[in-house]
Length: 76
Image 1 (tube, rainbow, N blue to C red):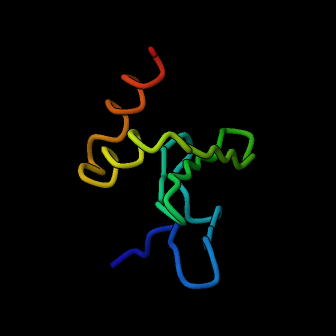
Image 2: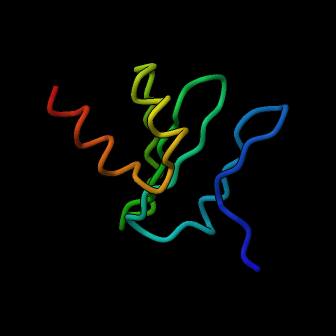
């Protein structure tokens, strides 16, 4: 079984960029914020933070729908 390249623990967020699929969006929820990560074709790691409490709440309830939820909030 493959381990997720993004995980959380008491110490914070653990990232294994070498295990990430290029241009795939990864996320985690830490301290009531959603963090988004992806690695591009040049090997650069990108990180974004979602602080909007409504978006975080929706993503927490439906993590598989994260891309749709983010698209909805980006239109606002």
